[in-house]
Image 1: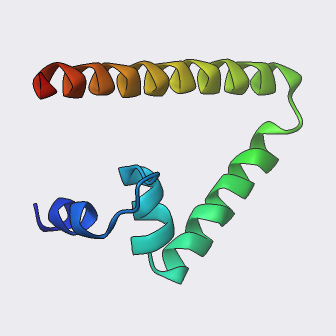
Image 2 (image 1 turned 180 degrees about the vertical axis):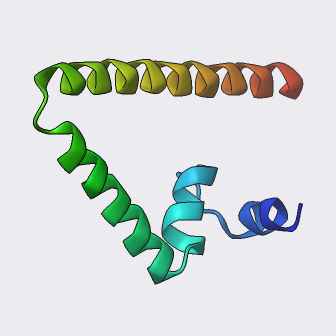
Length: 82
């Protein structure tokens, strides 16, 4: 788990793993590829309102799951600290 150890050594206080991986660790080629992929997904989904609604519903569910996982991790860390 070399990349995880590097993350723990070089992260700042507010960084999470995905943010650190996408912004700090990735090369410019991967960043451009990622942005172009998101843009192509947007262009593909843009014409259909139904797809937009489904896309935003899925994004809300994903955001809620990430928020819940973050809170669960915080609770577990506080529980271990006692």
